[in-house]
Length: 324
Ligand code: SAM
Ligand code: SF4
Picture 1 (cartoon, protein in one colour):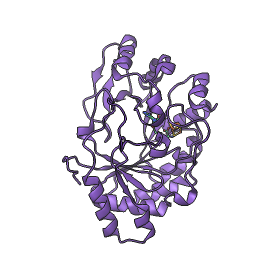
Picture 2: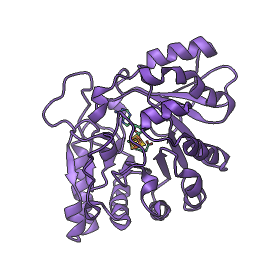
Picture 3: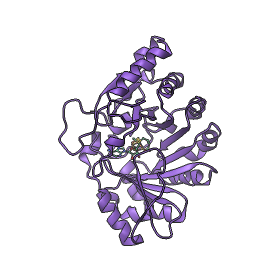
Picture 4: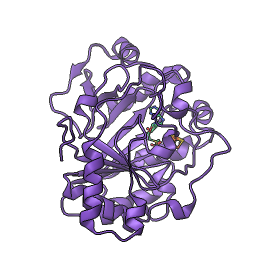
């Protein structure tokens, strides 16, 4: 469907949990997180109902995220249920990779099309400092398993900042040697991200051209998101940028989000949207659910205001509670 700005909304990001096995400094506090009670979290059946309604409104692509989606038991069941909806073309996953190696065969059999692995560094000490957990080798095993899985689209996501700026070239080198997209995501001023200073696309590109020479742009668009892709001489894979701060892409935003608690969130920065859980619990008809979602999506905000000070109505949660 089209929102009031005329944008075609075809992509739904679903957070399946607010829990995580890491504690990345820009995403989640080390301690004292008030977890959402289990009974407040949508069941896989309720999520599937929402995706069915979204599909009837034109959503074709679903990404599962979190928190860490793989800490939720039997995630493959949800992949299978969502992939079974006729209009859904792709089901993908964003994960920190720690639990991926063991779960990937089952997820792939269930129909998973692609995986984005968040990896900010290849240095074990730095990984422990950023994530507050010593789990780099498990995350790398997840990446290796994904790269070996036939037919799976694999992307690596890094949020560059001053503390991991020495890792930009090593991480980008993964795309030199393998068919993988390595993407640099600008730090967004959401939750703890407001307290962190990230590097801009320009700063990252300077390092990349210094090491790999001038970039070439990728001829065809890749995926359904806002990334801008480049390639470098001798690279098998690609380098992408998601630069919500320096290259605002709201005019082409095609996505809405569903939080673990069932809030249909229409823009990352604002708390605008609609709570779907009451409707799901009341046993409302598919048509009622669809109408409620349609109204909320139509009113999707025109753009974020990352470059200006926080305002009333801005998202107050941290990224692990929203889904990134
Ligand atoms: N746990 C999974 C993971 O890390 O991939 C999925 C959830 S995580 C919230 C999704 C993505 O959001 C990760 O790539 C993470 O780096 C990114 N992220 C978290 N906080 C961010 C922020 N303030 N700005 C930009 N990206 C952020
Ligand atoms: Fe967990 Fe992902 Fe947030 Fe890191 S970025 S704390 S892995 S939800």
